[in-house]
Amino acid sequence: MHPDLINLENTFQASVLTKIDDPLLTEFSIELWMKRDDLLHPIISGNKWRKLKYCLHHALSLNADTIISMGGAYSNHLHALAYTGKLLGLKTQGFIRGEQSSVLTPTLMDMQDWGMELTFISRSEYRTLRQYKDPQGLPDIKPNQYWLPEGGAQLLALKGVAELVNEIDVSYDILCVPCGTGTTLAGMIDAAPQRVTLLGFAALKHAEFLATDVKALLAKPSNQWDINLNYHLGGFAKTTEELIRFMNDFENKAGILLEPVYTGKMMFALYDLIKNNIFKPGQRIIAIHTGGLQGNRGFNV
Ligand SMILES: Cc1ncc(COP(=O)(O)O)c(C=O)c1O
Image: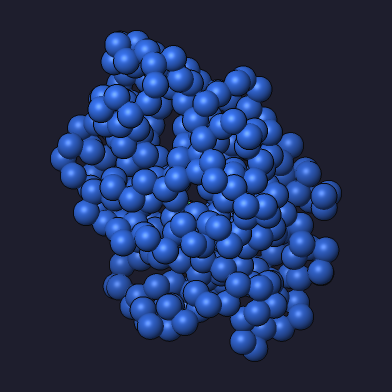
């Protein structure tokens, strides 16, 4: 590992496992734990660091000095990349989906302050960029530049995600994670013990493509996983009063802050599935808190 990345990671906090104390879980004889990847770092939090780590190592080993990527106006991935780039002395460039509005979102403002060069592109240009997956695959890319696809969805990302799974030192039956591109889930499937079932929860509507994308990323075929498509609650980043009520209630009970795009929806889904007796009594579930709390600035939560 590149020494700059080791030094950076040495400043991180531990991602602890927290058992959720809730009478409802006792009533259904389910043990629910959260792996607190949100605690790793206030900005480079959650699955962001897991996915970035080995990609950045690759970029540094190729002597790249500029990392280019893409995302939306509230992108946790670009936000974490911009800050990491600043800390590592790397230049960063972000292609942002949609036209620039007169006021930047707080996420974009941070990214600009941390030195990321922002380029706003149309939705069709954005869709075109999605097809480029390899670090040198972007048209006209220069040898000193390194391309990271949307959400950091690159094969090397899986290696960092595997570390998250390997840190879990208790036995468990089910491992859950929210899905955007499905990269984090794929890394977890590759790394999880054989008798564990992995459950992904799609943050997007019409996410039927996810299963194919996840399958394509896997190092070896597996049938111990599933993706639940039923809890997008209207679509990506859409919220409902019920979701916000659930999140507030969970935060009061467990003392763990959620965000409504990824981990909030996954926890909402898990509680709903538990109440519907989908899990067997006595099962231990571990849910990954994938961070992204900076995104809360875009919501009234
Ligand atoms: C906070 C958070 N959780 C989960 C995800 C989903 O991760 P993946 O794209 O690897 O499925 C993202 C998006 O990358 C995210 O920002």
